[in-house]
Amino acid sequence: MRRNLRLLYVPQGFPAIDTGMTAALQQSVAEFRVAEAARMSEAAAHMRPDVVVVLNGLHVFPPNHLEQVAAIRALGIPTAIWFVDDPYLTDATAVIAPRYDVVFTAERTCVSLYHSVGCRHVYHLPVAADPQLFHPMRVPETYWTDVCFIGNAFWNRVELFDAIAPVLKNKRVFIAGHNWQRLANFAWLQPFIRDGWTPVPETVKYYNGAKIVINMHRTTEAYKDNRNGRNWPAESLNPRIFEMAACGAFQLTDWREELPEHFRVDAEGTVNPEIATFRSAEELAYKIEHYLRHDEERIRIAARGFRRTWRDHTFLRRVRLMLDILETIAIAR
Image 1 (cartoon, rainbow, N blue to C red):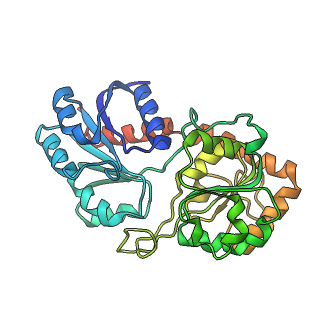
Image 2: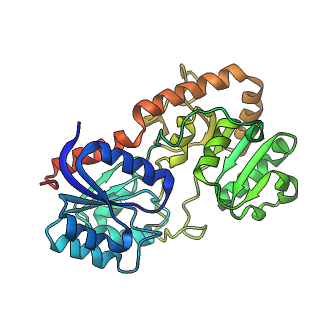
Image 3: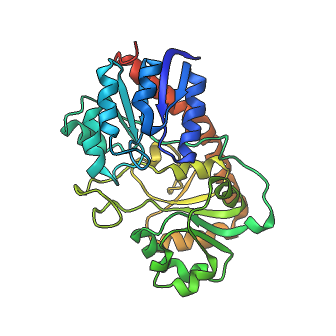
């Protein structure tokens, strides 16, 4: 059901999230427009929406971003922002957040952070998957692998892959992202590594072609590739968990405290798990070998995770929650 709202949306420039949010908002409000970050105050003055929703306020946003937000609020138009990179860039987001009327964060621990810097309306809103982008498909043999990982080489990931290199070196493996030359075992794994960005359509193909996709959240420490001077902790999930599951891919993901709230995990005694996890390099190495030998078990877990994601973890579901909150606190006119 469409809300009787006129909404202006300002994307962040990341297709995997922007495309899903755009489609979900189009389906959810009476009138919807997209504005470039560099011209959002101009677009708001022209449209006069009921609310402006901004994704992240980072990356592609210009130096006068906060001046534009102030100009929009001066017109009497409420503003909301959804931070989807928390807590890794909180040095910046803690400055940005108080300039908005409503703050959504993908990291539940950051709710108290934004309250502490003066934000009145702060809500945890998990990330999600876009089923139009991330979905099952048949792929050519060139995308078939035993183990796949797509992401940048943050230092905790480097540690992990150095530790499991002996398990990987005799398998069909695909690793893609920046900075993988950091590996101590780079010489072993170099034949499997593609340096640089992998476009979303290619990522989807690799997820669909892999027997196992590894998900490893980045570390939160301020000095390790982050702008998180407060060393704010992380408990919530990254988008990849939902994106992999939406493809019907089997994944092994590192543990996050919020994980059991979204999926049934493969803990001892769990009936019909929807996702498989690891807490150490040793456990990951063991489970790679185990699940490569047990095809039926692996496929069943992936199928359950797929069904759960398409039912509960799409951007359409998240947008409905966002709009419920905006209406509840009387932001929408």
